[in-house]
Length: 264
Image (tube, rainbow, N blue to C red; front, side, top):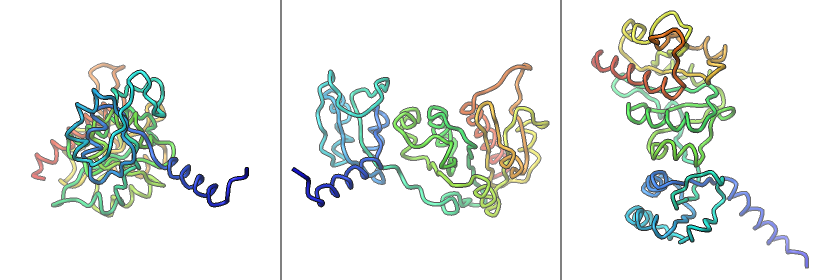
């Protein structure tokens, strides 16, 4: 029997809606998403043990959990995902526009820009560091960058719910916008002539944007050209290097310390 047109349309609408959601997993990521009033939450699947651990957050969310058998955790996750018995279907967060989100407060500001950093674990770790050091936002491109996923959220250990992660069409255009807001943009490159602390000490106090490229390719030519300055994180040995998430953490600490020393 052929399905009525309205049934087909409804099924298509449901399929489209499902395609716009993602699954968060792991106790920390699910807990913080449940506690985030800005997060649009759809479905919560937990084992009895996880439900006990998340009882307060579940109650606060008002979401009715589905209790799953730990031997058959029926959620569309990658088999390698360490879900800890908790998974939450959500819509991606909307953090708004760069101009409003990154407006300097009292003449100060700190932003991280990622040029084609696609590894969700690296981006998750960067979000965590950005939250610790009080960055206004982490900005990445819509394409060739890590999207909001369960793996990213788990690595961020809850920071995804609090640290703005903006996805933009054109990174160079957003960099130019940040300049109009008073930001000094410093690109990180291991081959740069000056150390980051030297650069930070030589510029007047004010908002700073730290620009990092993907491991291997580094900053693209257009991104590099749009930076105001290029700096390196010095290594004790000739062959030492940091991955992008560690470099971001070190750079964020250095930039925040420089801003504090400058009275900002």
